[in-house]
Length: 269
Image 1 (tube, rainbow, N blue to C red):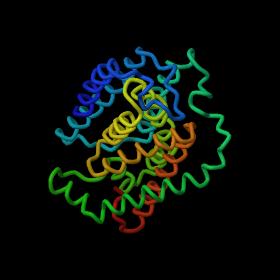
Image 2: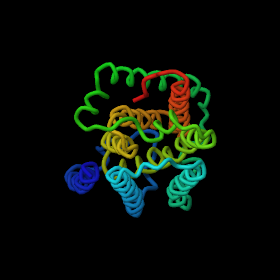
Image 3: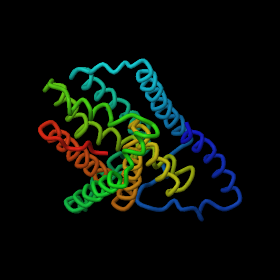
Image 4: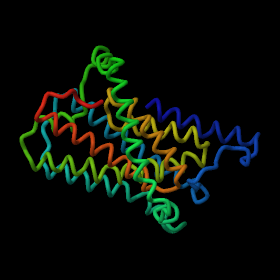
């Protein structure tokens, strides 16, 4: 709710300041275009935000009732399909205005760079995660707020249902990177950027990306990850880069969870 309030105050704030200073002076550069963004897009931003808030409330209510029933493989895949449908709302809102291949930079001529960008990104995020663990972030969160790893992480480490395990892994490595990157970097970021400026948009959408995973322990890492993915998107102009980085990060995390089933490894942040 703090992020929502921050955003709600920022929009009129930026609009007011722009009446004083011309828009040409604002930091709206970069490879991610905002020229096709219209005020109507703020409505869809509101829909996405409402969905995230509703999901958070349902999670809190479930925790309060101790309703932590283990999902089935079918329910996980159903949720993944729903997430893809949710993500498809963004390109559906844009396809009449611009060529989506052009808008999302899907014909990226520098695609070979992904082979060094992705490893550097994953190693960097893992280093940050290790630093967080060594600094005692997880213990501090447990001591002050309680809780533990994300529910999906706990299930992957404990379940004996191989179909469920496969469904969660597939959703994390394939579905989530595509859907979340289309929503956050592909759509929310340029909309917020259009009505504020790019650094505010990067920080806001990065923090929101961290919040929607509903886990205090992983919030700093995921928020930073969201900001870095925005920077990579701005530099390259292609959504393939954040998708590939996101998928590789999730894939490595899933790999560690699988190892954790065989050996006593500490949970990833």
